Length: 376
Ligand SMILES: CC(=O)N[C@@H](CCC[C@H](N)C(=O)O)C(=O)O
Image (cartoon, rainbow, N blue to C red; front, side, top):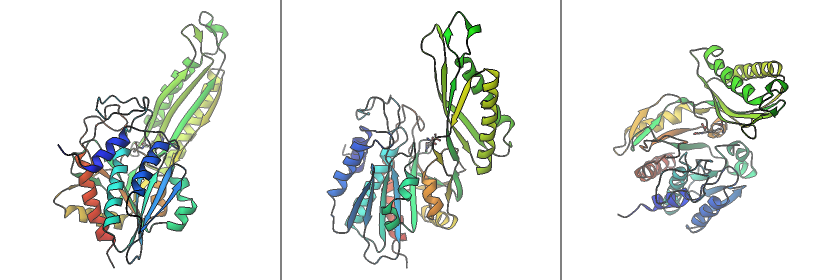
């Protein structure tokens, strides 16, 4: 069976996942591809491991932006696919290989079929952390080429191929990473009374953190606190002197983020007193909510409804985060979910999106951008 050229590109990229700001091979792969396209209407600038590509229109009145994130995750792939990751501990488990190949599909089409307006393709590093969108937005290139509207997509394993799910207004949550370091007094496993055990303190803290959502956040609001990783101690018969919790906070409402953080501080203060230890909180990267501009989103939804190739689904908000929210804070536009029918979800080692979605997305977005880029 002949494989679609952009599915082939997706498979190449799938094999070389790299984490935030280390996307060196990915950037090189993208640059090799982009510099082999017709260059007459194109200008390329790199920013750290990211890339900006401007395609000049024939009669430009505005610039339309498309953003694709390019980083992978520290997950050991378990798909068993013949084109599985070659980078042992990393995987494109959030679909950024799809986002990039769709971006290259659009770029290829518009270099061959220029429209009136200018286009800006943004291949952005570090979406999973620590965040590339906000600093890229402040870059000199962005100041010079800032688009008038911008769009991005995210794969959605839970929706069937052929679905475009979107809503006006709030789409994704406000997020903040969470790192808590605990330091007590280690010692011999047989003499617990002479120590302050940080494994016990960490376990207690994880349980207490879960009471914030159930007891401090208004039940009609939504929030999530997930502790995704705990480390502590050295071996089985030494009481742990240190422990570290790594997690993430999500809230639909920016005010709830402030409240959640003040409760975390209070509970951590309590742990310090109760377990006679020192604790340090670091909030790492924070992402602004993804808020879809109403007029453009509604227009895109109406456009999608007219398509016979894809189905529009009006979705609800999700507790996922996306640093594309920073771009939407400054530039009108929207993000949407692209159905990819995978039994396993985002951030799962067996995520296996259906590649038919790549061609559907390229076709739908070339039509949409052509329509937007030719309006008076
Ligand atoms: C779409 C998606 O899965 N995005 C990530 C963004 C992570 C932000 C940051 N590292 C954090 O964990 O808060 C997500 O986990 O939602």
